[in-house]
Image (cartoon, rainbow, N blue to C red; front, side):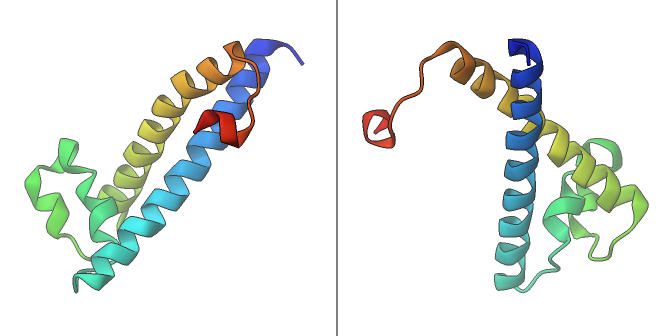
Length: 98
């Protein structure tokens, strides 16, 4: 597998894992604050729906799908430079990385 393809696949995996884990954690925090678990995801659609998006408590295509899509795209976006950096640097032990 060539380097660019490997980096692209790694970016997809890293970004997807980061997206799912952070969305789940934000949902748990929202529940702990007495809010709907979907509010953090819905709030991410504020770029399209304005500040009122954060108040939407139910799942719907307009807020939840757009919000999760935005959240997921940002996780992929930020995983790309991280994976590119990893591809250019030799593997290190966890102890050395600290």
